[in-house]
Amino acid sequence: MTSEVAVYERIRSKIATMLDLDVATLTAFQSIRLDMAVCLRFEIDRIQQAQIAGEPIDIGRLANASNQLAELLPPENNSTRLDISNLSDEELSLFETLIAKAAGIAPAIEPPDESLPDPRTDLLARMNAELEELRRDNTTLKINLESARTRAAQFEAQKAAQPEDEAEATPPPGPRIVVDNEPPTYGSHWR
Image (cartoon, rainbow, N blue to C red; front, side):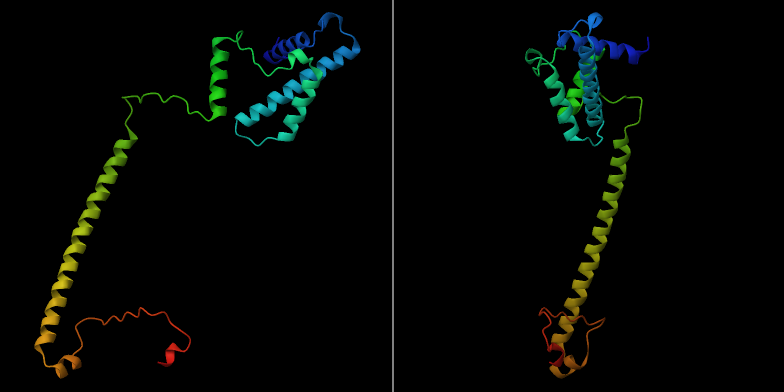
């Protein structure tokens, strides 16, 4: 028997037990009811697998299949309790992983293999190199700022030493920057 057939037979047998049916002596109506319940169970499982895989699902279809299956089962088997006592260790581990994934709980992180290079070491080295470059740039900017302040102070001292007529006639060295802090208004170009 292939694994698909074995799974089908196992689920069919479980659902037959839930429906309180004897598979060997099924009437046509009971057989149709059992097959419908099995198909609904497979459809629910397929939709849930798609959801766990992160694929989009049709919630209405899932709700419809669940409600139809609930109507087929007798009330005492309509509980939402899941019996995991007969699962193998491998199935139980898979079940716990799926529940953790569905709940959004991250799996435990294994310690890194010491034989592999740590990618964080390379990242840290690049970040330290970039930091040193930024520190050099900052030092250069500080020196240039201090130099500009010194030149401005020298210019102010020269301007103060000159008579007023000569100071106004001589523009300062370098480009003249005018800063207008007022926002432009309509007709401001006429001033």
